[in-house]
Image 1 (cartoon, rainbow, N blue to C red):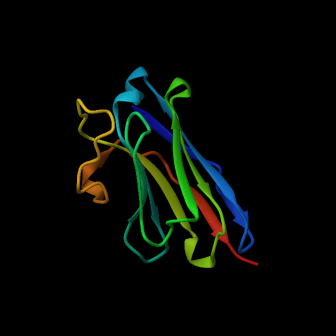
Image 2: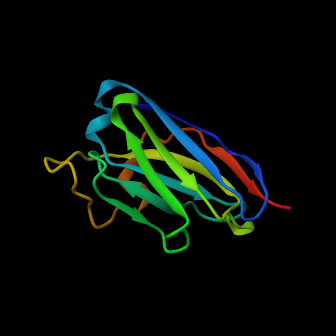
Length: 131
Protein backbone atom coordinates (compact mmCIF):
# COMPACT_ATOMS: atom_id res chain seq x y z
CA UNK A 1 0.00 0.00 0.00
CA UNK A 2 1.35 3.39 -1.00
CA UNK A 3 -0.03 6.44 0.77
CA UNK A 4 -0.27 10.09 -0.20
CA UNK A 5 -1.31 12.82 2.22
CA UNK A 6 -2.77 16.10 1.01
CA UNK A 7 -4.89 19.04 2.11
CA UNK A 8 -2.44 21.02 4.18
CA UNK A 9 -2.03 24.75 3.99
CA UNK A 10 -2.05 28.02 5.87
CA UNK A 11 -5.00 28.66 8.15
CA UNK A 12 -5.77 31.22 10.84
CA UNK A 13 -6.17 30.19 14.47
CA UNK A 14 -9.67 28.87 15.03
CA UNK A 15 -9.95 27.74 11.43
CA UNK A 16 -10.42 24.29 9.91
CA UNK A 17 -8.70 22.02 7.45
CA UNK A 18 -9.44 18.56 6.15
CA UNK A 19 -6.51 16.33 5.35
CA UNK A 20 -6.84 13.39 2.99
CA UNK A 21 -4.77 10.24 2.74
CA UNK A 22 -5.26 8.32 -0.47
CA UNK A 23 -3.98 4.81 -0.90
CA UNK A 24 -3.16 2.57 -3.78
CA UNK A 25 -4.00 -1.08 -3.45
CA UNK A 26 -7.18 -2.97 -2.69
CA UNK A 27 -5.94 -4.19 0.68
CA UNK A 28 -6.26 -0.71 2.21
CA UNK A 29 -9.44 -1.83 3.95
CA UNK A 30 -7.60 -4.49 5.97
CA UNK A 31 -5.37 -2.06 7.87
CA UNK A 32 -5.85 0.26 10.79
CA UNK A 33 -4.73 3.75 9.80
CA UNK A 34 -3.10 6.55 11.71
CA UNK A 35 -2.17 10.21 11.48
CA UNK A 36 1.00 11.58 13.04
CA UNK A 37 2.61 14.99 12.97
CA UNK A 38 6.08 16.42 13.35
CA UNK A 39 6.78 20.01 14.25
CA UNK A 40 10.18 21.61 13.55
CA UNK A 41 12.75 20.40 16.04
CA UNK A 42 10.35 17.92 17.64
CA UNK A 43 9.79 14.20 17.43
CA UNK A 44 6.99 12.69 15.42
CA UNK A 45 3.88 12.40 17.57
CA UNK A 46 0.65 10.49 17.37
CA UNK A 47 -2.50 12.38 16.40
CA UNK A 48 -5.28 9.88 15.67
CA UNK A 49 -5.93 6.30 14.58
CA UNK A 50 -8.90 4.39 13.22
CA UNK A 51 -9.63 0.70 12.90
CA UNK A 52 -9.88 -0.99 9.51
CA UNK A 53 -13.69 -1.11 9.63
CA UNK A 54 -13.86 2.44 10.96
CA UNK A 55 -15.76 1.54 14.09
CA UNK A 56 -13.19 2.66 16.64
CA UNK A 57 -10.93 5.68 16.76
CA UNK A 58 -8.31 6.99 19.16
CA UNK A 59 -6.95 10.50 19.64
CA UNK A 60 -4.07 12.26 21.29
CA UNK A 61 -5.25 14.30 24.27
CA UNK A 62 -4.03 17.47 22.57
CA UNK A 63 -6.49 17.08 19.67
CA UNK A 64 -9.40 15.29 21.32
CA UNK A 65 -12.65 17.13 20.67
CA UNK A 66 -11.12 19.18 17.86
CA UNK A 67 -9.97 16.59 15.31
CA UNK A 68 -11.95 13.75 13.74
CA UNK A 69 -10.48 10.81 11.88
CA UNK A 70 -12.55 8.90 9.35
CA UNK A 71 -12.11 6.60 6.39
CA UNK A 72 -13.88 5.52 3.24
CA UNK A 73 -12.70 2.05 2.28
CA UNK A 74 -14.57 2.16 -1.02
CA UNK A 75 -12.43 5.16 -1.97
CA UNK A 76 -9.30 3.75 -0.27
CA UNK A 77 -8.95 6.98 1.64
CA UNK A 78 -8.62 8.23 5.19
CA UNK A 79 -9.32 11.73 6.43
CA UNK A 80 -8.46 14.03 9.29
CA UNK A 81 -10.93 16.84 9.92
CA UNK A 82 -9.19 19.49 11.99
CA UNK A 83 -11.29 22.19 13.66
CA UNK A 84 -10.45 24.94 16.14
CA UNK A 85 -6.88 24.91 14.95
CA UNK A 86 -4.21 26.43 17.15
CA UNK A 87 -0.69 27.65 16.38
CA UNK A 88 0.76 24.63 18.19
CA UNK A 89 -0.96 22.38 15.64
CA UNK A 90 1.57 23.62 13.08
CA UNK A 91 3.46 20.61 11.76
CA UNK A 92 3.96 18.27 8.86
CA UNK A 93 1.16 15.71 9.03
CA UNK A 94 1.72 12.11 7.93
CA UNK A 95 -0.62 9.21 7.39
CA UNK A 96 0.47 5.62 7.79
CA UNK A 97 -0.94 2.13 8.05
CA UNK A 98 -0.41 -0.18 10.96
CA UNK A 99 1.88 -3.05 10.03
CA UNK A 100 -0.32 -5.81 11.41
CA UNK A 101 -3.82 -6.86 10.39
CA UNK A 102 -6.40 -8.34 12.74
CA UNK A 103 -9.29 -10.72 12.38
CA UNK A 104 -11.47 -8.34 14.38
CA UNK A 105 -11.83 -5.37 12.03
CA UNK A 106 -12.51 -3.05 14.96
CA UNK A 107 -9.57 -4.12 17.08
CA UNK A 108 -7.09 -1.40 18.08
CA UNK A 109 -3.86 -2.60 19.70
CA UNK A 110 -2.89 -0.93 22.95
CA UNK A 111 0.29 0.55 21.47
CA UNK A 112 -1.54 2.26 18.62
CA UNK A 113 0.25 5.54 19.37
CA UNK A 114 3.79 4.27 18.74
CA UNK A 115 5.26 5.16 15.31
CA UNK A 116 7.07 1.82 15.01
CA UNK A 117 3.65 0.11 14.85
CA UNK A 118 3.17 1.71 11.43
CA UNK A 119 4.63 1.28 7.97
CA UNK A 120 4.11 2.66 4.48
CA UNK A 121 4.35 6.26 5.62
CA UNK A 122 3.04 8.70 3.05
CA UNK A 123 4.83 11.90 2.26
CA UNK A 124 3.61 14.54 4.66
CA UNK A 125 1.51 17.61 4.14
CA UNK A 126 2.37 20.88 5.89
CA UNK A 127 -0.21 22.56 8.11
CA UNK A 128 0.59 26.08 9.27
CA UNK A 129 -1.67 27.80 11.77
CA UNK A 130 -0.87 31.46 11.97
CA UNK A 131 -2.52 34.85 11.85
